[in-house]
Image (cartoon, rainbow, N blue to C red):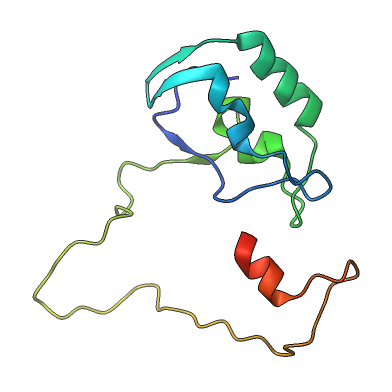
Length: 124
């Protein structure tokens, strides 16, 4: 586990595929604070949780250990990257990452478990 979450972001909306109640938020009760000002309340519970559920995968094959900062995974935050908050500008500009539009090809499609696009849209 790590004691400094300042330079890390959990994978958004990550949840276990076979155990959907497993997510990075299962650790929220075991520490307080944020960034580099966290206090671990129950280190043993975090270690046990990361160990027990660390190999649980989401539908894309990403494990909890890869997705959750507290278990040593997550996405590193780059100080030099653009902010996640848009800035206001009165000058026209071109986007380096144009917006993509996603359209369902077959509105009646379902996966082998019977879940369709609408179900996935609620979680992803």
